[in-house]
Length: 114
Length: 116
Image (cartoon, rainbow over all chains, first blue to last red; front, side, top):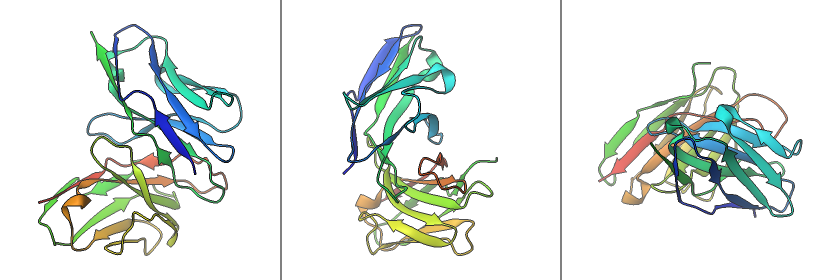
């Protein structure tokens, strides 16, 4: 069975400092991995996705993530946080052949302090 | 794209009542998904349609839940005899035609259900 574990439920950073949101996955197959962001009262938005091409994936708004198979990790980073980055972030896995269901982690709430 | 739309955005109902939610996917997206998100958790998959065919159903989708997509466009999700445990955000997503399992799912804003 596939699963994702987001290691931090809350992360707080100061504006202009780096962001690191951690995600470990468990998969029996070659996974596809995603990061989605959810702002209050808005729909989930895809930040980036990994689909077995380049292991370093660049997404929108300056975010990127690196797929590390040996560590079963897919951590999300951004060099410099902006106030508008404050939101809930979800690590997501899809790996089961023939199935389209996404499996979400429990989320990490990012706070950005001025 | 005008985005995935869901109606209503909020629904308050009394235990035992039936409720129905509607999802309009992005035009020309032939795949449609329903998820449920409870407070403090990530979304959980409920069911998936390709055109009008319901191809996947989660064990979470009890007999009280039924989803339809009669003409392969909009979809409805009905919950019969609601229970307090049904209180959640119900999310709809759609994706475009293709063979890749990594097609991006575009999510709507959700319908928040509160069962009193």
